[in-house]
Image (cartoon, rainbow over all chains, first blue to last red; front, side, top):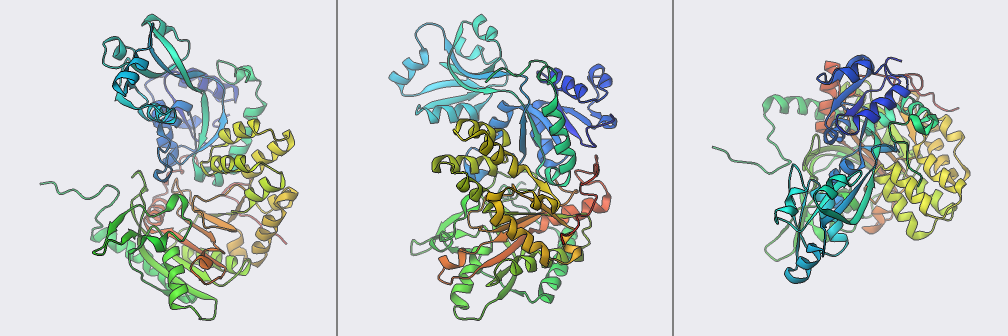
Length: 231
Length: 343
């Protein structure tokens, strides 16, 4: 197969890359070059473009790709904060099941410093790479917070005393444990999602539906690396 | 020196203005030829007047006070101001009434590609013409207008705003669940829809139907296999199709999942797509209850085109490098093949 029913798909580099390439291979794409050449971005002959996961919704929304694979965490972070604001205008078509992680609120082991800060100071300081998800979660649970956006190792922030808690994505919890942090709350489970451009969804309906059909018929084990966990 | 302008707005300089003017001149000619007279209304209206319409996501976002302390709002569309004009200036005029407009509207969106806060809309409103004739006329004017601009590959997605609510009602979905399901559909989130359906306690069959039907889109054959609870809306769509000339009918893609984030739509709704642009160029639909809120109960239908988006699509088609051109049309039944009108 030269491409997915003539469709262009945005594939995320990073944690979801392996699962996505396995999936594309199970769908019949020739993924050899995609696997071996990690500098190339545009694989026109198989209709694949590769990019950072957070850029996938951008390319798909603009129609530069018909479809894309990205994590639910990315979609949630880019979703509309207030309804009138308008989030990313893309279809979320399918939960692909792999790349399973949990968005958690964590703080230093022992008596919860966030709890202490809330009680005595009225606000808890929270470091995160996901400021919108964090702010929404704390608002929904009625707590006042000061969100500190960081770009790198979030675990560092509570260890230095800059904040009392973090909101971050964790797959196994190993990094948290190694940094003496414990999960206080699970916010949402995130997996890889298949998204589509809203115009392509109409103009290329037959191709997209054929692909969805093919995806649903794949044995769970071939739907990327980690098989979907039972609900 | 930097003198900024507000985010989501821009200056239009002569080269662009000339091209935009050429497009609007063509559209104006088509609208006038079909009997739609052009109107201007104030960009600022009393907020309380605009608030009579259920604008939902597209409600006015910018407000100022006048010297008496009254709250004024920048209009977010032209449909509501024209409803006001009809109720006040044409309170006893014999319908149908036909208006067209070229006007800037203001939305509180987060500026992104193709999502300005000040946008030039070109559109028509047909007041007092019920479905299906009125809807068919609006779609015909829309196609004639787009044809006249030279846009080649556009398609019109046609659905019905009442279809999904009717489906939920006939499957006896609990009231509090309905809101969530509709919201997921408006957000284009089929994964979320599926999750909500799984938690809803609905039978497997009902849940399957509510997930499957809004994902159906394609030619008129789709209307034949629609499930019984959607009969009313589907019959409405079939009636419209029967009234369309072949050149218009072949542009139509039926879309049983088409919903709007503007609350006042009641029946047929439609979006304009072109492969050269990743977002709809415009859209419209029936708003049979809006005029009643202004005191003149009349059925109505209209559409608005984003002039800038139309301009981008025309330029994209010209270059042959539209946003979606990389992959091109993709197999049988897709955009490349015209849809046969039903007999």
